[in-house]
Image 1 (cartoon, helix red, strand yellow):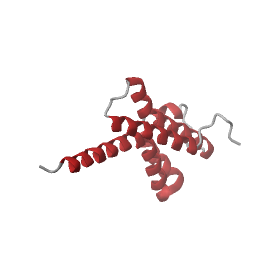
Image 2: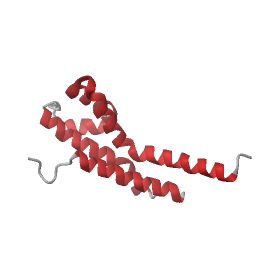
Image 3: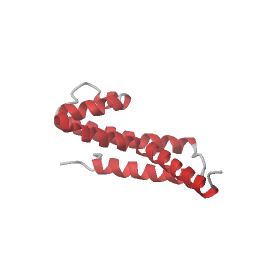
Image 4: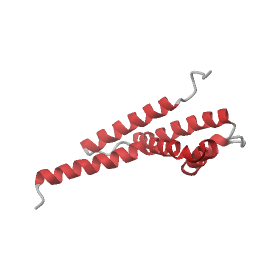
Length: 128
């Protein structure tokens, strides 16, 4: 049974969604966020994914090295696909893609929203 302090995949999804919404809001108003907020927006989804993956690896018995959590925080772009393919085989690409998307969701959202807003401004102002 999961304790109340365990990070579930739902928590990681909600963290990524909240940080993506905040990033989109800042892109919409064309203001750069404060450095602490920018750090939170970019780091919180990655931390939530790493915490979930640490719990999942403990359950699966894969992350048996001494300091799996710290190792995961340092090398998460490499270890997420490794873990997904190690535990799920060839079908692990879906888990790897989903977790990497969650970790990068605010960055992807901000970039997509920025392109959309600039595209709309270009169409509104005309091509000339």
